Length: 161
Image (tube, rainbow, N blue to C red):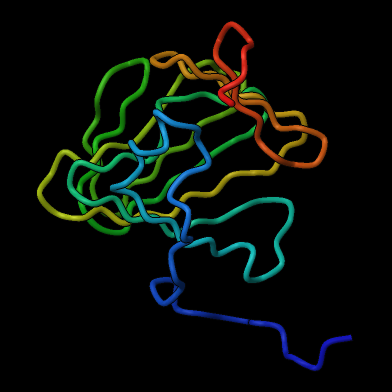
């Protein structure tokens, strides 16, 4: 039993970004160099959904454009003007705007920072079991295994190892 008190509240921007920029295999991981994620939900012991405080530097992107089979996602823009890319095209967002991405729609999405200023946003997603991710623009697929770890393959099923 720990004698430490649980964390009740923090200033989100004070949380150190995670050291590893991406869990994607190469050649995709290096495309995330302009992104910093501070994992907030884990600090509070949240296990049903994740919350990230994410910064995109100019030229940065949130992720490869993707859609989830079982996971819902939500973003809320705090600072800057990212471009939201979906199957419908590009939409410039501004502080105070939000967007949600329901699972199973096939509407692939990503944020890109085409501006000269940094973008900061909150991203929230559930932690659905048996999720899979489709990337329409890239030769990659992802499946969440029984241990809760992402496994990445080429679209033909071959490994990136």
